[in-house]
Amino acid sequence: MPALSTGSGSDTGLYELLASLPAQLQPHVDSQEDLTFLQDMFGEKSLHSLVKIYDKLLQYERQSPTPILNSAVPLGEDLTEELQSKPLSGESRELLRLLLKPTFKALLFVHDTVAQKDYDPVLPPFPDDIDEDEDSVKIIRLVKNKEPLGATIKKEEHTGAIVVARILHGGAADRSGLIHVGDELKEINGIPVDDKSPEEIIQILAQSQGAITFKIIPSIKEEMPVNEGKMFVRALFDYDSNEDRAIPCKEAGLVFRKGDILQIMSQDDATWWQAKHEGDANPRAGLIPSKQFQERRFALRKPTTLVPLQRNSNRRSYEETVNSDESEDPARGDYNSGFYIVGLRRSFRLSRKDRKTNKSMYECKKSEQYDTADVPTYEEVALYKRHPSEKYRLVALVGPIGVGLNELKRRVLLSNPQHYGVTVPHTTRAKRSHETDGVEYIFISKHLFDADIQNNKFIEYGEYKGNFYGTSIDSIRSVMAWNKVCLLDAQAHTLKHLRTAEFKPFVIFIKPPSLERLRETRKNSMIISSKDEKGSAKPFTEDDFQEMIRMAQVTESQYSHLFDKVIVNDDLSSAYSELKKVLDRLETEAFWVPVSWLHS
View 1 (cartoon, one colour):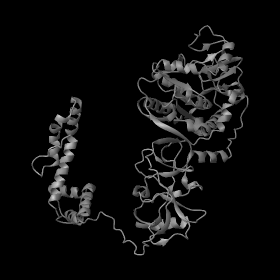
View 2: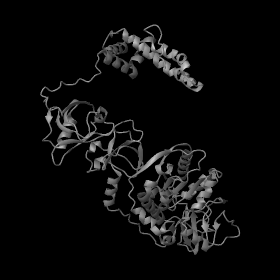
View 3: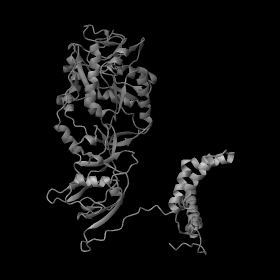
View 4: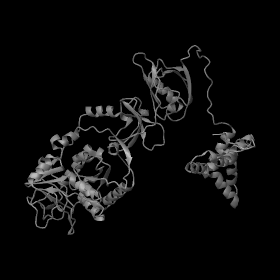
């Protein structure tokens, strides 16, 4: 392309050049689309404004301006004191308000800094006793503020040399680009460190402020360029570096809680990763135990066992109800003030006595026992927002018997029956005269039920009074196929089998309040108990409350890493309101999900 003319005058500003570019480029552009793009780009108002500012600053710089006064801050303070000591007119009052504004004070401070050219750090002179033949030694000066340098050191076992073990991403050492992993540290501010321990060296650094001079022998290894971390993980455990005796430097550790989203900045070290909290504006990373290291530590710990409370072993428990005319079914319609919701099922839940016949679809692997051996550390995640053309995410509700989960589900269904749906369970019992196949239940033969068990079609199933009941995977698909949000009351140990790209479940744990609050809020509620052979509804007992809290503790300790939200059902109306808000957000906002769901 021929050179572009910049005009006849030597003082032509950048703004004039920018304005003339579209016309000069036109003969050299082949397509109208490219020409339109260039015209739009060079005609952008914000670009023109920036160029105008640049031209004005350039003109001002050519004038070689000198400040009239290089101490505007003291002048402003003196003027403020004088105005405050006298009666003020309207204009004086306005001037005083202006002088007291933090932004104006900051402007005066910047003026003085520039006028006095006090914005460069004052570094001490280089030492005179540098051995010129020792060309492998580097002298480095860093200005240390209140933040740590962002590097850890270690003592080599064989040589005794003090070397840089790691550089924390985003820290002062990393930003300087002057210190690298493997560099041997010889002196700090002229103090030899060969005979000192890493702890003593850290103490020297902690007491040093301002410019710090390092004498180092550079590492021979060539470092690969560090890329900005693109990996995000959800923490599945709590971690406090101050309580970790294995961490190389407690001050460099990153504290996090279960459920926090962490951005992994470096995995170069097999034992200690570098990470920061997602969205944290601080560029400095901290140390966290690597997945492999933390898994090993968890595996070596003795598992904690929650001791069950003393209770009657023959009690069969279900959620509270107000009608018992179909109490022989473990999954039945919910009645409330005489209103029956077609398709609303009680989840198939059994007490410990009856769980010997309640099986998950992976019972052959003893799923619940395998869960106790899980070692949750980190789960790689990515942001996901449902596209309007996609099916709604499955909403899995988890909670102990009697916590009110079924009533919360009923209220959500009533709020919009066209938008929310529930699964229809299978059963082998005979259909009654008032029932319709596929509405209250899907009625199938014992032979077909056994075949579905063998084909792993049930999420969970069990036997009750000689009849089999179960919730199938296809029943979830059926609700989702109608473009509805499927509300599934699931047992916790089935969650890992539902966590697939197909369902993308959002798991909500409904948690009971304190024992005292349970006694207060459930005093008029009812629960079905097999203490009565007819299975009629009875008031809650103290055993029921204690069992509810115990089961919540067991579930939370074992499965909380799978929960996306925890709602305490202290007050039913408040819990429903919180649940509904979460469900509404789920359809409009982006949430972190396992990265495997987006790449399967």
